[in-house]
Every structure is written in structure tokens, then in C-alpha cells.
Length: 420
Ligand SMILES: Cc1cc2nc3c(=O)[nH]c(=O)nc-3n(C[C@H](O)[C@H](O)[C@H](O)COP(=O)(O)OP(=O)(O)OC[C@H]3O[C@@H](n4cnc5c(N)ncnc54)[C@H](O)[C@@H]3O)c2cc1C
Image (cartoon, rainbow, N blue to C red; front, side, top):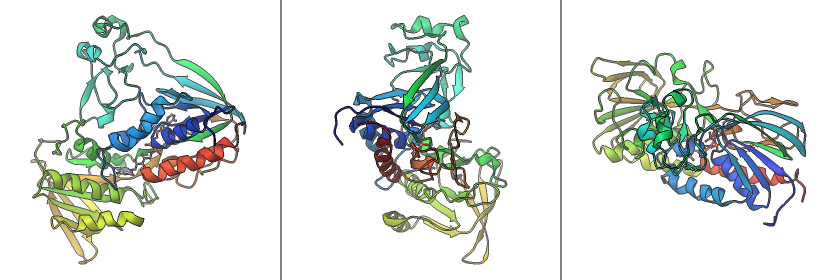
């Protein structure tokens, strides 16, 4: 493929690692791309990680490389805070209607933070799963692209306050900004809508939302991250105590007829990785992983073997039935112990639920024709309409390396629908 311009455009829906990779590959092949992301920043779930396996590098490493290509590509139009409303037409000729929600901050923003300093309204920070707060005027995350503040219109009191307007020396605040409708003609569509964490509050007996010291695996990523709510210190939410013992509960809601039937494929590795976060900070901490089957495919098996060499690390084969918390915040995990044939009760400081990946495939979009999903709600790779493809976790739960590879392959297919 040449680097010179090609006819037509590809629409990429979702700006996680899969969508960014697809956009970059298409852009570098000479194709115009419109990328639509519902968040005020691109990066998806990977941007929320502390480190990622197998190399345990921070997202600022792998993600940053693709982001740099993304930012400098002249052929990518990136629309954040945006969602697809409808797609009509046929393969090789689609019309997409996009709603761009107001940021209330324009391109003059220098990310100086004066608006947030002046803002009197606090809100729970969704990026940190509510474990910290931001002002209504906020920078979405430390490595946000675009590097611009946004104002949360659901809590901002608007012009009657106006503190941020007075504080901004650059005229970047526009509290009367309205939603915009943008229409684009595209030849192919790539669904890179990724995944959402399964709602752990739905799982009976495990106490999420009831016991303060039961958290999810994504919360653990934020707890361990230096730009997270505790500056990277892993501690109990109830009393900020350090960790002497911790339990990871695998398949929390996964491979279960009542919740998510599928195996999310990455949760075992995520817990093994997070066990290392804990052991690095607390050399004496005991780590228990309760599992049904440990799934560490291919070369990732090495990661399991290396973790198992740690004497403070115990694997328990058995499903966790119940978690209780006492008045001091200590937890008791009750599980079957398949290998010894009995019941095990373990006191720990913190429990991490390895909740699975649920599809986030934006089926609310009005579309001419059908979007095909599998029995678990993920998109099938090639959509029956033609010229529409799914990539990364929009298709099935998977890791970053597979998502990036997928993106490259799918772009090659999508290019066939655009003119030379
Ligand atoms: C706890 C945990 C730890 C993990 N750690 C690792 C690890 O160390 N290494 C590794 O390789 N993998 C890891 N993974 C897996 C990794 O998160 C996925 O491989 C990765 O997120 C896939 O990227 P994606 O772009 O397909 O999806 P996402 O990251 O979910 O990105 C999708 C994007 O699409 C946007 N979007 C969704 N719907 C719409 C819509 N309708 N309109 C517009 N935008 C939309 C979302 O806002 C998001 O930005 C981990 C997973 C978990 C649960």
C-alpha cells in the first residue's frame, strides 16, 4: 500500500487501542479516517492500566507509540465526546450521523488547570471508578488526547456560577456550547467499541458495593497507577491500611449461566500481573488466587510459571461462595478447595474480583440492516451488510497484542471498499 492519498473514507467507531491502531494503519496507507470516541479522550481501557502484560510496561509506553502516530497523522479526524446516531446506505457507500456532545471547552485550552482550580463543584471521577473526585471542570486523565479540559454538563451549574470563565486567561470556556450533528460519507465501517467491565454488584455473595474492601480488577489497576487515586499506593479503601494479605477471585461473574457465560480470556493474566503489583509494594504480603481453571495461553504461560516461583503466592482451585467483612474492615473468603476436598476460610485485608469483559457494542445505533452478534453479545468479525467489520474486544475479549494485530488485518479488508 502506498502512502499517497486514496479515495473515500473509513469510519472507526471507538478510540481504544484497537480503534487507534486501525485508524493509524488506514491513515498510513493513505486513507482518510473519521474516528468517533464517546469519551473525552482516546485510549480506551488500556489508558486506565497501571502496567500491561506480558512485559509489564506502562501504557505510556505501548499506547503512547500508537498515540504519537495517531496525533501526527494528517488523514485522521478524531471526534471525541461523540457517538454514532445512525448509519444508512450500503457497502462502499454509507452515511453516518454523529452526535458530538459539548465539551464546553474550546481548542484555545492550554490545559493550565485554572478552570478546575476555580470550579466549586466536585464529582466522582469515573476514570478512577469513583475512588477519587475531580472538579466539574476536569482533565480526563494525565495522558489525555486531546490534552484539553472538559466540563461535566451533568453537574456544572452553568453561567450562574461562571467561575471557570473568569479564571480562564485564554477564552477557552464556552458554557453555552451545544451538541452538534455531523454527517459523513464513508465506504467502510470498523467497530472498535471494545468492552465494559461486568457489573460486579450483580454477583450474589461476593459483596461488591456492600463491603468497602471488595474491589474489582479495574479498580486495582487504578489503585496501583501512579496517576491513580492514591498516587500508586495499594491500600484498603475503608481505612487506607497497607496490604498484609489479599485474595483474587477469578471468574467473578464469568463462565456462569447467571451472569457472563463466556471466559474473558485475560482475567487470569490480569490477576497474576496484579499479584506482582502487590508483592512489589509489600514484600511480606500473602497473595491468594482462587480459580476454576487458570488460563494463560501460549507464551503467557511463562508469566504464570514466574509468578508461581514466589513463595508468598498461593493458588487455590475452587469457586468462592461467599465474602464477609467485619467491623474492622477485615474480610473472610469462603471457598471450596477442590484439591483437598474441603471448605477453606481465609482472612484477608483486600479482595479483588476478577470481573470479566462484557461487550460494549453500541447496539443503540440505528442502522439500515442488521448488526450481527454472537451468543455472548460480541460482534461477529464480518457483518452481513458488507463493508463493516469488528476488531479487538468488540469481537471477543482479548489482549492488547491481539487487538493490535486484528486492527491491521481488518484495515486491509476495509480498504477494499474504498476506491484507489
Ligand atoms: C483488569 C484487566 C487488566 C488487563 N490487563 C491487560 C494487560 O496487562 N495486557 C493486555 O494485553 N491486555 C490487558 N487487558 C485487556 C485489555 O484491556 C484489552 O485487550 C483492550 O482494552 C482492548 O482494546 P479495545 O480497543 O478493543 O477496547 P477498549 O479498550 O474497550 O476501547 C474501546 C473504546 O471504544 C469506545 N466506545 C465504546 N462504545 C462506543 C460507541 N458506541 N461510540 C463511540 N465510542 C465507543 C470506548 O469508550 C473505548 O474508548 C486487561 C483487561 C482487564 C479486565
